[in-house]
Image 1 (cartoon, one colour):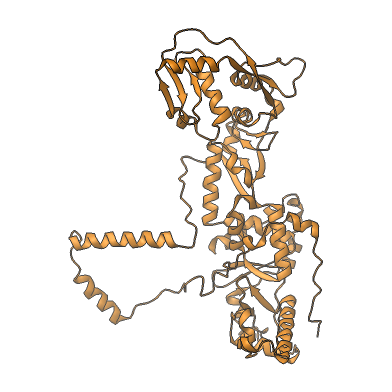
Image 2 (image 1 turned 90 degrees about the horizontal axis):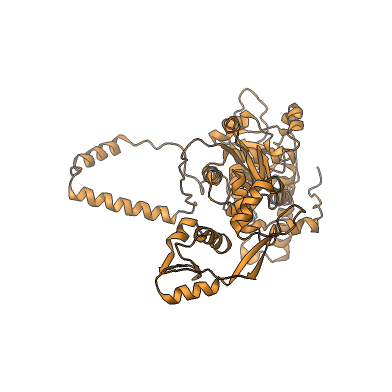
Length: 507
């Protein structure tokens, strides 16, 4: 008999610092979808003839559809439905309709830190997780995934490109959007601001506009620089608020004191200067608008990179301004959170490259990921008495919980577990169970339930255990897909097949 223990791998202190908290990633609620605690039986319930007769009788006695009783019943049903929807544990992601055909192809992949944290946890615990649950966990928070954006063929035909800011890596759908972003966020990075003394404006100003959000004086509506001033105020102080909302908050003050206060403010003006100017660059600019125009015409290639595909970290999503690209990303993310097929396929490719094992279980072929290849016992294979007893108990009590083995299998109550004899028995049980899991004879699912597959049948003609338990021989698959893996070495998350897609879609 093989050794019952495997020496744990030493932890890398350097990698621990970069890994996110696994308590929030691999939650205990991610149980197998086929367990009774997570999903009700998928088998349809057939009513008996007597029940059908009673239902028809009740239906005949119902009031007409336009009766007051009927209206009250519908109202109560709506209230009950909304109550259930609000108390559901599943996140209620809002549906965002797509206005037109998308110009972009959006994909989500786990970040390196997140994937390393999950794979390390799976290898240390030996637990098996449902693939879709892992994908949903990654998509739940933007800091856990990477967004990959590429231009569709139709968009390429229309000569559209992606525009990436060279300063922070954010993606936009036009060079103008990148420059507007840099002007708004780029103070200290691409330009510096300096206040200088100036001659105040002269003229008749009966009304002065004031920002209703910050309380700053803006300018008279009839002032020749009015549009320039309000755009500059919005860009420097209210960039997180939409411009139309800012305009609605502008107040008009018709008092002499307002004009005096604004003229006093205009005795000081701002000058803008490029942080790293070249010899042929202007010394300074009178306004942000003039600076923006200069960068757009003369410095666009310095700050903007055009491409047809790129990627950025999900934590930058909140910094993207409203645009068609942002709308497409939000819609695709919402769709993947509801049914993460594409993300699960990408995740499957990453797990395959990391030498994890993939199997499908149940009539629907639900996909699972395990760090250990599962195996069946063969006829004539024998183990120690304690392991044989443990195997027999789990086979008689399928999907039993790991934490209940001491009480149900060893019949040791909680108040007697500290006795020396009982403590030795519990340690032996833990050692035996760990050996069965490491060797692949037992499977521990994410919710702590255990499963031991039946022994290999001697008569292949009558063996039916594989009808609802499909084991994917990953080693054999990988040998036949070496060329495909080589093509996807730079992006292993995409190394998935059409057959994988079809099986996952059905699950």
